[in-house]
Image 1 (cartoon, helix red, strand yellow):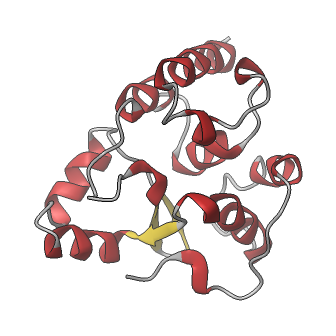
Image 2 (cartoon, helix red, strand yellow; image 1 turned 120 degrees about the vertical axis):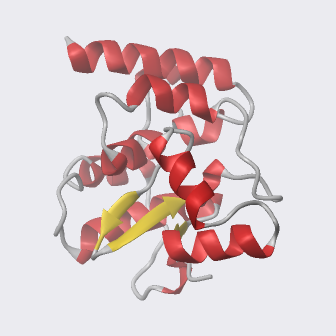
Image 3 (cartoon, rainbow, N blue to C red; image 1 turned 45 degrees about the vertical axis):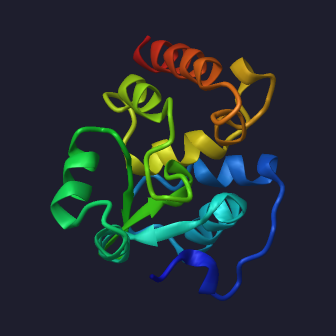
Length: 160
């Protein structure tokens, strides 16, 4: 499976420095630097996998296939984003056995109506004021209810 870790130019970066860049990563065709910033922000939590590679891995492990991955995405149980004609899935959404992380579906349900895949990817790694400047990705495992409340608040702010 190809993940983002093999790309040249990856370097650890400060989450605050990432956040300003990620806000500009919302349109297809953005430059390599924006993708590299996003990739670096996710590196410690499993990085990204291409959708095709993840589907094959799910099938190899008896956890699903292309169709089941597509259902998860359409059902807003996991998210991904397109970059350079490939679907990229942040791997933090899965546990070691490739099951879905608890609490994620509810968070995605709150944000999916207002945020596309790239904006969701940015939201999870940006410091969040509702979480005392912690990143939702860092809080999700320990306190999914708190991340859900932050998602609700941010959706409310986004919808006015």
